[in-house]
Amino acid sequence: MNTDLEKLRGLPAHLHREIKGQEHVLDRVCSVLTRGELGMAHPRRPKGSFLFVGPTGVGKTELTNVFTSYLGDGAAPIRFDMSEYQLQKSVDKLIGENKHDSGLLGRALGHAKQGTLLFDEIEKAHSLVLDLFLQILEDARITLATGETLDLRAFYVVFTSNIGSSEAMRMESAPFASIERTVLARVNQTLRPELVGRVTDKVVFARLNYATQRAICEAMIASEQARLRTLGHEIEVGSDAVEFLVRQGYHRTLGARPMRATVERFLQDAVAESVLLHGKACGCLTVTSATEGLVLTNSTRLPVLR
Image (cartoon, rainbow, N blue to C red; front, side, top):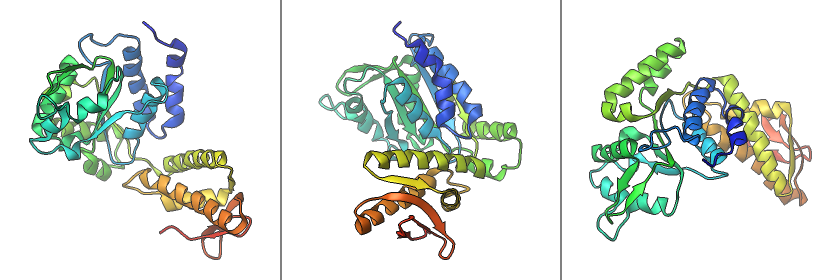
């Protein structure tokens, strides 16, 4: 077994640093990942599988990206959007139409020996596509139209779903345990039980409250500042500007998804305007009370995001 134990010991702390507002999820995910990395998974199945359920923008895909990158030294998940696989012919699209076609799944895997397969919005997939998932979860194998059989025992498999999200939003004042039971009940009503039963762990993500989205905003600001710094632009963000960005990016139902666009737009606009006017970008981004907009210390004014 060739496992970096020190790196694996650091996995929980890494996930807790990167993923906000889902602490109840992370230990369970770490448990599956640790067993998978230590070779404890069933020898004829994937290293681990997850069904991540919850509203949009709460971190389901982000968590998959983070653990895949951490364990795979910067690798990204192989992602399929199930909204594109709603028809019967979707099976051919995935595994190929004839002996000369390996399908999108075969081409995406290529020579990959390990990694993560991410299937977003599984509830939208055609029933014949779900049959393929049964084979993947049970035998860690999939046979392409070319006749080639792919061995997926070294892969993690992640399904995401928004099933039960409307019920969860209506129950926002209820204890999370009650919300979790309701969502999982809807999952069991919607998806085939033989599929749900083969998944290693079913995890319900919580809605992101204002405080959590603020923490996410601060992390996104720091990340964007660092990226801009590599391009030679030094932007500081005042506390009033942070509050402004949080207010502009916060969304009750879409979670943190609009926050990234908000942060990137305002910081990048600041850099662009400053470079155009002064040939460089360096200063502190603050709020102008007169227009409720953002301005650099060199008086580069930015429009309010609506």
